[in-house]
Length: 484
Ligand code: MN
Image (tube, rainbow, N blue to C red; front, top):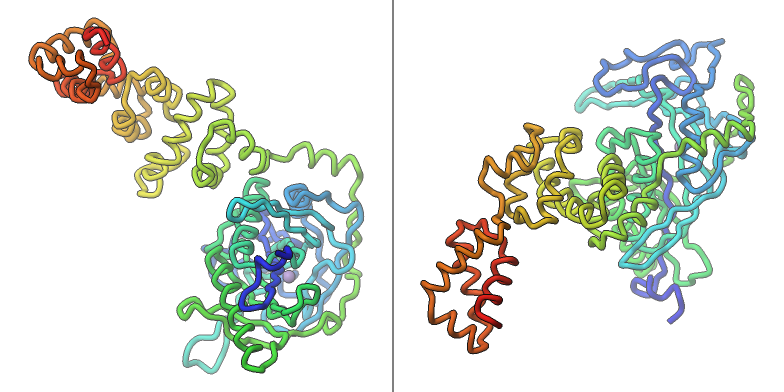
């Protein structure tokens, strides 16, 4: 089978490239000293002469945005370019008062890089073409039934990093895995709040299909997707739409499309302008960005650990890959677990990973507690009790809510709730003696070599101890006493 054949859909070979706009978590805008967080602000309250594009207003590059873009470069497995510059990208839009967007054209801050993804157990590398800094536009709204539109410039000038992938994905599942990995990379690098709901990361997917894997077909671009699921669905929809169109004798036109979530389909929005229509030229108001080697080195050294580091660290704990991904979703959880493993042991860390990705995760999702409170709790105490068989996993689940909410020691709560297992040999022996005396027939069966009866006897010991005997010890004592 030729390599591409696994991607064939009805004899067509799909190709996907993705552009992602990441909103950088700066305090102020890219070129103006105006608050960048417009989430709860009244329309047009976070604006200055620069956001309005007043004549003579001069932009000044926000150093923090540059710093975050440099960090993003390393997170994309690349390095910041020592020389980059800003260009004007011209288009007419009511929410773009300058008449152009300040972006980076031929000398972006990031060139090259890659994201490693895993799809159906298979490792793949998706190349990054480039990433550039640019200012966001404002927002237009069109009130229903009115003969006017509204413009809000709060978002105008917000710093974005546009990350462009190579057209190296070939299925909706790969596209989804790529955007998820990009999300994690930005989250761990701490360059964005990555709040998808508020559009902190917006994905544009370029999809084409071709019968000849060596030749790309005409592509459509579906813009402004803001969830992993919508990326997957839009890619899937476009692959099928284009194949159907071509099979019916039609032609795919190069155009911008939008995703209609209610109808789970893409619709045509406008035919794509070609690059030269933007009349790019260097912005004369902004000097080029020149980075010293030393500046780049300092950023590299300050980089937090990446998701890949934690994946390799957790491999030792022998968890399911879905468990690992659950733990990775919150960087501080991954970091906590990794440090916990170094301070204690892999055995305790494995117990903790099971608790975090199971019962604790459930408490957080149910809104019973948040991760900050969780990480202050006595996990070393609880995992020690589990590892030493002083508490059952069922018992541990009962300890967790109080342990997280009241920050008391695991052992104190287990004692209060009467959940400690009896691991005292003498105490268990006494119970075993009672059980054996009360159940002569099963005891005899075990003596005759009928080992099935042991389970029954252990069950009786558990019952007599109200579930608190350590079952493993009970079994050992029964076996010893019956001489088998
Ligand atoms: Mn852009």
